[in-house]
Image 1 (cartoon, rainbow, N blue to C red):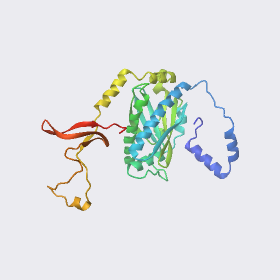
Image 2 (cartoon, helix red, strand yellow; image 1 turned 90 degrees about the vertical axis):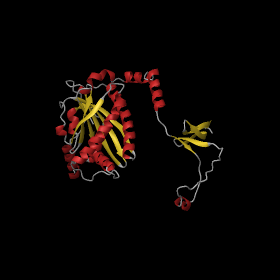
Image 3 (cartoon, helix red, strand yellow; image 1 turned 120 degrees about the vertical axis):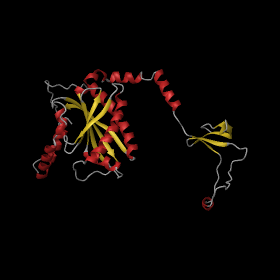
Image 4 (cartoon, rainbow, N blue to C red; image 1 turned 90 degrees about the horizontal axis):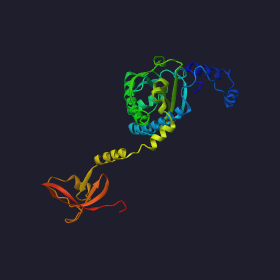
Length: 327
């Protein structure tokens, strides 16, 4: 996305192709030649390759979290991947945005400034349709978003922003908060057009609908933590991240977890007609013997055998056998 066309330039190019003013064959030949990228020494890129690589690693982790969350939230197959991570001027990013658009202005607390999360309209319409009970189809003809649709998107974006905390925790503990949603890039002029930004482009697929999502991270926002955006520091933190304190914390969380435990007194099989004619006081014969053992289930898994009884005037089960996994 180094040379990004505006929507007007794209429309003009399509008109020239239809009119025959542009030769497609020559255009393809030019695209195969080596391209020379201009470098302005007066405005050099403030993002080094190491910084870009670290930002890519962070957002690859974020893409995996986003895939899992949206798949469960929308109850359909969702795949989000990082396509590219590039440094460019802010004006290049804004010129590539078509109207209408979904631009989430996000406060990246405690870092200064804001980042922008752009969602392609086709993806936004698919999200709205799926949330409202549809099959996740997009709109054939693009139109503006209603207030109800924007409210739905604001709630969803606020939820997916909370997933950013974990990927960024090795750099800084952030608290991203959605400030507002803009549908026109002209109202999202948050910084100078010449300001350098890191643009993370995601490919998102929701069912059969595909589109792009962009995360624009200005240099002024991540400047206080640029020293931590190093792959060497990143991997060193990951390697030494497992400490006795963290292991104890995980163990405590596991011990505090609650699991369903149930005792099955017995099982039997009856006909539907007998089941419909059951009344209060009827006796159902179970297959469990009087002195037999009953099953104790942990979730849906048979884990123990025991005998029924009483303890402190309450019904209880005394565990007699432990069922191993290999059994």
